[in-house]
Length: 321
Image 1 (tube, rainbow, N blue to C red):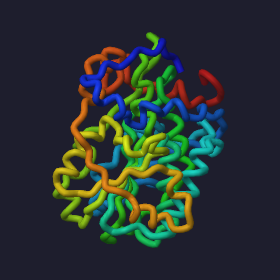
Image 2: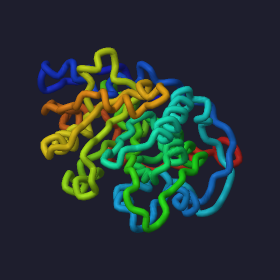
Image 3: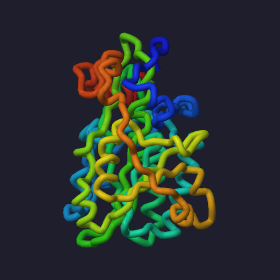
Image 4: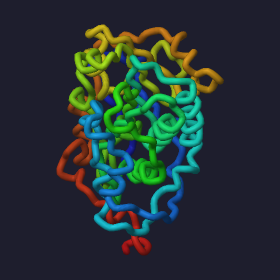
């Protein structure tokens, strides 16, 4: 990963010094990208089929297929990170299975903001263990690249090595679970190397349901799951690109709860939610509106250098094959 020296982020108000979203602390606890291993790469069409919700699923329209679109038209072999080696992935799988088995309330939207591979593992385990149907919504919106800033191929590897249980067509009341990649805004305080491809991205309010759409489906509560709420959970906030969405949800009367992954480490994880205080987001400056953040990027966020470079990342027949 090619980066320049750290540069302080100029926020609009010093009062927000304690409001540090997950990506601001992400690298302090992130495990190294695991070594690659050889595996069978399906065609893009086959990969889509494994994750595509039924046509009548109300949450289908929010799924993003960008990352899976990086696959080719034919089945082949390639090398991708062995995400099974990540401890976070292992924990996410265990806690996802435990949460699903305890039952998901029908009035709750889950936003799972973990390292991409861990979010996939969590959602996959949830779908198989839950007695209720689960609608997993992918929000991964970047490509692998030769000198990528963040490891998109890690999330891709998880998508290809997990096969969720999809809701049956015509079934109503599936539990919506949005899967996010916490890498997407990593290195927020640093300037990438000149040769790095900045494949970070951010999500917008249009990537999530409107409050009225949630209420129409009986959704009255949002649970935002991250790896940790930090040393002071009282100061925890949502990721910067989710801030406007969360403010709108709160203003519409939807209850929001913040949750750390380790808090699910108990026999009946649903009891954790009953003890959670509701979170009320307060307007704060974010990097989404910070000119200095974009000035430090190397073409990310839809810029001219955030282009696909897939074949240089997933090596077929060895490096440079």
